[in-house]
Amino acid sequence: MSTDKTKIIPADKPNVLMWTILIIALVQMPVLALTPAIHLIQTNAFPDRSLAEVQTVMGLANLVAPLTSIFVALLINCGRATKKGAVVVGLIFLSLTGLFAVFQHTMFWNFIALSIFLGLSMGCFMTNAFGLMFDNFDDKFRQTVAGYQTSAINLGGIIFSLAGGVLATVMWYGGYLMLLLGLPIAILALITVPNYKSPSARVSGNYTDKSGLNPRIFYYAVTVFLFMMLYNVCSANISTHIAKLGNSATSGILVAVQMGGGVVSGLFFGRMSERIKDMVMVVACAALFVGYLLIGVFASSLAVITLGVFIAGMSLSLMLPRCVYAVSTLVDTSNSATATVIITSVAPSAGSFLSPIVFTNLTVALAGDSTVFRYLFVAGIALVLGIVITLITLRGVKAEKAGLAGA
Image (cartoon, rainbow, N blue to C red; front, side, top):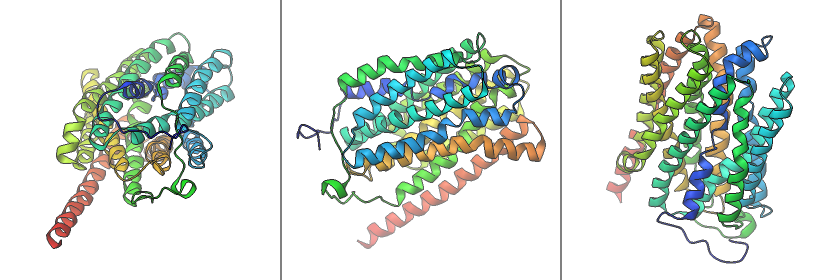
């Protein structure tokens, strides 16, 4: 339901809104501008803090973001806010976070505050950018755009990580300057994004057969949660892993290579997803397993580490768009805000936040500070996750065939 009572017509071909969503996607991984500096922050800026503390504070944005997105979703479901408004406010707040870093960066509480501000921003604009795709594109076109969107997210990650790595060599908070890009994109969104309200079915009375939350939404959410716990290990530990092979700029390049893998896989995601459906998630787990195996086993070879990072990076543009697209087919405009929060904010943010808390502390307890062991350990977990998803997917296909045979 739009504010001017006009009907939103689902798009099935490239349009201005699609390009705006893709441009917004370029700034949907702002943390990657900061991760190349993790080792520098821990050793130079705040040497009295442990690596786990620095990683946890940087991951704090992933704790604040879902809480913010839940609050914003409640406002949207009550008809008190629009997705356009949330996107614009979030992007403006992103630029203000970068501005704050310029003036406040000498104390550890400044570092904490920056992560909180970043989380508030992400919680406003990231989930609702996905929601715009849910509401305005038909199923087939949405599947294609989902792949392009993830490629754009990774392309932005490349830009952020490279620039962040270079800027971090000048000043540890240099990566935060990249967040200033939020302002011009906010202006673009203000001009091009349609302004419509999408209250919940309970508030609007517009019930459909998709108005309730399908249980499969939570299956995909748990999958994304576990996957992001594993995926985040790559960028969060790479600067420490290659400390003897390069500096912050080298770490930035490797994070960019990781994103490059996501750009490549995102380009052919649409056709791959259409053919093998949920088995795409298994391929994503396999890529993560192989990538981490290479990073861990060949820890003294920067060339092989680079290859491993690229392969691991390919997993993101296979797993996330598949889960997002699958969820989008299970909802309508009355509950898309809630579903979007679950699959694009709560699940991935919680996974990213808990990743260093779980895997850094667990592997330190098992094998000390060895990042080699950490990558190999998580590779094994990725393999197990892939096997579990395979069994669940095959069971679902079998049940579907049995249902068709009995019909």
